[in-house]
Image 1 (tube, rainbow, N blue to C red):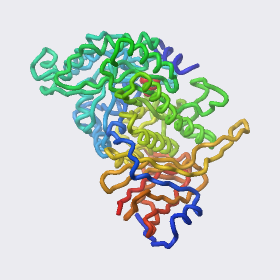
Image 2 (image 1 turned 90 degrees about the vertical axis):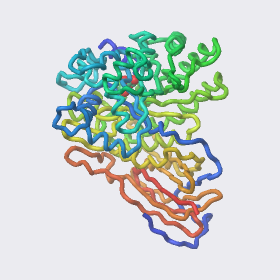
Image 3 (image 1 turned 60 degrees about the vertical axis):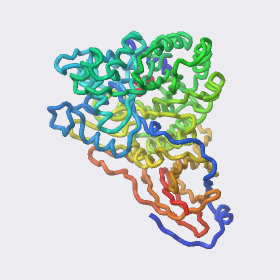
Amino acid sequence: MRRRDFLNAALTGSVTIIAGANSHTRQSRMADANIEIMIDEPIGIISREIYGHFVEHLGGVVYDGIWVGEHSKVPNIGGIRQALVEAMKKIQPGVVRWPGGCFADSYNWRDGIGPRNQRPRRTNFWVDAREWPKNPPDGPWKFDTNQFGTDDFLRFCKLINAEPYLAVNLRSLTARDFYEWVEYCNSPPGSTTLAEMRGAAGSRDPYKVRYWGVGNESWGCGGNFTPEEYAAEYRRFSEWVPRYGMNLSYIGSGPNGGDLSWSRRFFARLAERGGFGRMWGWGLHHYSWNVYSWRTSDWFEGKGDALNFPVEEWYELLNEADRMETLITNHWAVMGEFDRQHRIKLVVDEWGSWYKPGSEVHPSHLLGQQATMRDALLAGLSLDTFHRHAEKVAMANIAQLVNCLQSLFLAYEDKFILTPTYHVFDMYSSHQGGESLRVHFSSPRVSYTRKNGNQATIRGLSGSASKIDRQLTLTVTNPDLTRTCETVISLRSAAVKEVKVTTLSAGDMHAHNSFDNPHNIEPKEGKAMLRNDGTVTINFAPASVTKLQMTLS
Ligand code: AHR
């Protein structure tokens, strides 16, 4: 079954400083790999929104994950899980997308406002999904109680200091419902009946929501449209929406992975009438799921297990994630055929790993999965890719925040842990707002053997660098499961004065955090050698994610 068919079915259904005498050239020859950072070749500013998240009313994401209720024994801030708020604040989230995903195109925002005890219960989009774990209990993940609505989500964003990004229902509501949602969120205090309702809910002042997604996966669960049909819908929804003195940033429902024709046909149709309907971003979704692409493209057959997997699946999944670079450059090229100035940027509003069911921490957690060091590598590799394309990628949202696909947290009742993916977001947050720099990696590819006996390879070291004033951040992933990679790092037209290293690694590729062992994987201080010629030598551990914070002399 293809992914699109699945979604249609779901619709119904420290530092050691060693002064050495060696010249950089000699070091380069001796090392396994070299990294050269081009200080004078800036790419673009790494937007905060690349550090974005995604929250859908799906399984245990909202109910249990975020919303525990005001009367819960779980410590909460007005019903919102307190531990989650504290952990999120630490990693400086740029933006959070809500309420879906596929759920968004079946959601009526009016159901989630007003007094909680008067809100209706509605059938959740995911009620008949094929991926439910065995014996899921009934609950809001099947019949949404609407206890968590617009005001609750926007309060969550405020608590964690993130911009909200609302996904609009284009399949089953009207353009009027969309602009009235904008009115509810953004109209001036007391100006309209909806502004008064918002005031009654506790927010007299407008929320000033800037990011609006016009539909979701409109090629599949969001209406099964052709690109031309969607272009007409996009135009109808996005015209004449009240702005209340703000620049609203619309995000179009873009392609599924490599479907270049979706992008091309959409922009061709939109361009026919001139202009791009105030579009700010073009959504791109890419999940890493198929660990057996050489033998199948079936949405269910191709998936592997989150925890118990062979060496081959480690590399195959990371290779899938590494496709992101090509997806970005290809769709960007297509967009440029129509939008020559590249006014519209890419928004990778769903990305991450997707495994088969079985590792979820509770049967109510549809699409819930555990996360190992492999997911940490995937997160680092993907964030580095976004940085390397900072002039193209304006936002990215990992799917999804808690208890779901590639989550930063797992939670059940009062149990709450951070996954390895969380630690990567924490380590990488020093890139935010930095100027992304061109970096040259020269590192051997890593070979592995597929089940059919064939040899395959994956890129060796990769990463990204950014600079804020005299502070440089370099992040590097080493996917090699067995080899430590001795590497010389040099800066073109600059030298390093100080270096601090943080590493996330584990001896076992299956290592993960659990409720019983929550601190199994955590970042540790690492070592590097700073040479008196201003270069740095470091050993990248097998299967590791590393951050070097360097002060320029
Ligand atoms: O993240 C889970 C689902 O994957 C989203 O609802 C949908 O947009 C995508 O297909």
